[in-house]
Image (tube, rainbow, N blue to C red; front, side, top):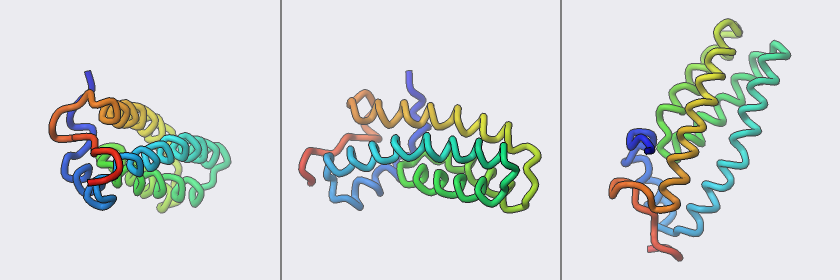
Length: 132
C-alpha cells in the first residue's frame, strides 16, 4: 500500500492545472523525472566521494525542485537539507542524508507510478488524455 501523504494533493493539482490536464504531457514529464532523478542521485554520490560540496549542492537543488513540482514534498525537503549541507561546504552528514533521499525517492516514484495506474485515491486523479 502506498502512503497517501507521499504526493501533496495541492501540488499535484497545480501541476495538472499548469498543463491544462493533458495526461500525455504529464506522463512525459513523469518519465523525464524518472530518467533524470537516478542521474542526480548518482551525481550526489559522486560529488560526496570526490569531496565536491558545490556539485553536491547543485544535484540536490535540481532534485529538490523537480520533486516539488510533482508534489513529492518530503523528498524535496530532504534534498533541501542536503543542498544546505553542500552550501555550507561541510560534507559531514551528507552520506546519511543521501541514503534518506534515495529511500524517499523510491517511495515517491512508487507513488507517482500508482497515480499513473489509477491506483490512488480521489485526491490525485490522473488527467484525461489529450487535455481538459
